[in-house]
Image (cartoon, rainbow, N blue to C red; front, side, top):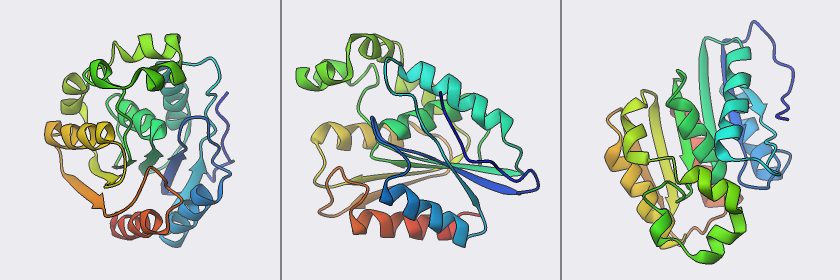
Length: 203
């Protein structure tokens, strides 16, 4: 199940950090991002996602339970890749203040006809079937949080298309950030510097 660090109930601001598919928030890049939030006076909560045998909808349900159980005046979410999808889908169902979506994965129903078969195989049939029911165009209007969308110019074309399409669909306050020369790698120093800059700007 999803685990989290103990939080202080008097904390006014909390940031949830959701890793990419199969990854752990204990990795250095997520710990660095936690430090950025701490420097801003925001408590980081590292989300451990139960990836094995789960669908994105199940991941979202568990994460919303964590969000609801965390008492804070302001809540921020940062997710990378599949973690960005969990962040995005959760924010359509529950109020958060700021979303930082790093390299949103191209697995919405609109993307599936165009993604490589190897990518589909990698995530498994159960997860793929779940994604077939999730349409970005139907969800974008439900996002109220100020949203930052980031992607590297050396990422796959599918990711660039997905991030741009989501950006265009959003009706809220939004920012699109292209990272020159960056691949699908949150640990890249250029990626982390941009995240640090965003964290320094959030209210």
